[in-house]
Length: 51
Image (cartoon, rainbow, N blue to C red; front, side, top):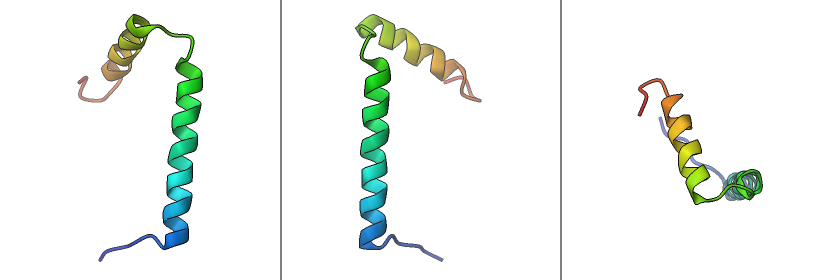
């Protein structure tokens, strides 16, 4: 079985993705490059497989 988004659903999904990206950018705006790398490393350690 396959499901496909309608045109309206695709727009909602796209808008949601844009909003999430803006929210994360806002959260990270005060971190410098090294701090962002460190955060990414720590978040990856939280994944079940640790990668």
